[in-house]
Image (cartoon, rainbow, N blue to C red; front, side):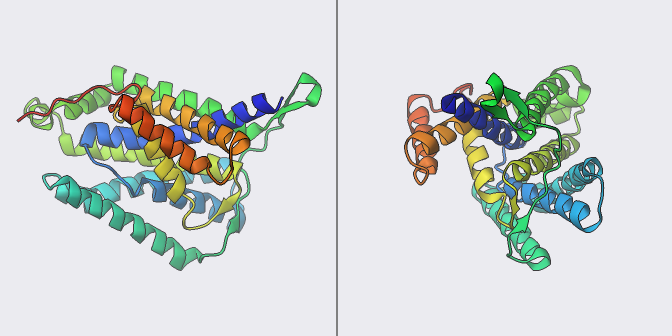
Length: 293
């Protein structure tokens, strides 16, 4: 039963990574930017839920909705203020700016909430699922996390394939200049991408803190890096790739922690990533990108 329990825990953790990775992969796939402040948007979303539930006694559902709204707006503001002026700049300039925004959000959280670890109250209050006569218990947070991940991935794929805004995203990802000539609002499309990614970050953050109920200004840093790793692992720019990469990464981490070493679990994750990229540089489901010269 321990193997099955670890597998379920790995899928649960991987689902959180996958939701975060979807934000990374959408922004990179459409705007060709690596938004390293994405992990800190997760942290902001968690603090919104913590403050509204603990301090204002809000209903958990209302707190989550408010968190998604605030993170969505924050994502758009970050894009407009920090990234839009650098649309034609070098990738290095965008990367440095992203790191700067990340440190800004962390330090603002430090000033407001302090460095003390906060105890996060889970927003999921459903009963656990007991199987095999009670020898296998699946927590309600695990169930909600996995279902949410699958629903979000399917919803995103349908959104991109079936809606005008989704088609505009595909056009911008292929060629910004050509899309603009065809009447696509490139700036609006990129802002929408950041909005969706940041809203997903809020959901992922709430699920993460519900599963691991501690909260600090650095809560989103390591999950953000691992989710970016999952996006690269699966093939950055690919929505199914982000899902597959996230799930595999979560399973590898949990199994590495359980069967090899809890201290080396992170190293094992990144070592597997290096091996995959050596064998298939585009990631598991990624496609080669041919640069125009």
